[in-house]
Image (cartoon, rainbow over all chains, first blue to last red; front, side, top):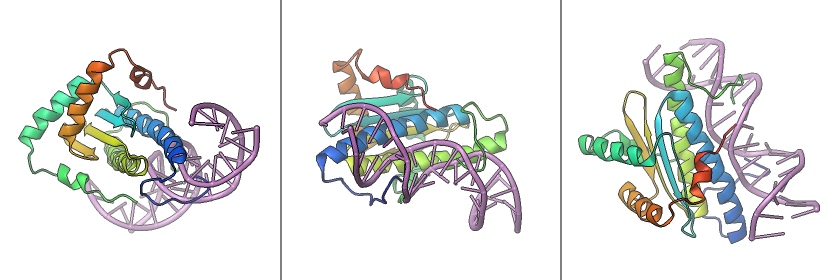
Length: 90
Length: 90
DNA sequence: GACGCTATGTATAAGTC
DNA sequence: TGACTTATACATAGCGT
């Protein structure tokens, strides 16, 4: 997107990396919120910048999302979710 | 995006809602992965469909992301993160 | 180094099979 | 209902301040 095409690998220039982080972080949080509303889904997103700062979004409370995650994980070990984890992306 | 413009509110037609969920869920997970790689960030995403199925992504292990979240939250109560939670979107 | 502005690359709403 | 296609809306890379 944008003026040029990019390859998905760590951005070396730290200024550029920080600018991209700021833009994409906002984009991701926005998409997460849209997904939750449009599809009536429960969503939780946690992002730590390389400097350790936390940014997050949760459709309800993050605590409840995490609790539900823990409960669900217990009952779904070795489930379809694992496919998602290896999702290759662009 | 797509052939028509949409408003961000719960999609009533359940078939359409499910199709949109599937597409946007994949898009969100992809973006999360890209952010983690491009910006060297630690990212965790948890999504529960309205039918209760879990989909997730984590740059490392979700467990470590959650632990880090809990630790960080303790030290940042009433922090800038709250701004993110009210991010208004489109 | 953070902010605002487009030209462009992507994600995706509809539609088709 | 799921998979594939296409036209568009949206996100954002590279620049200029």
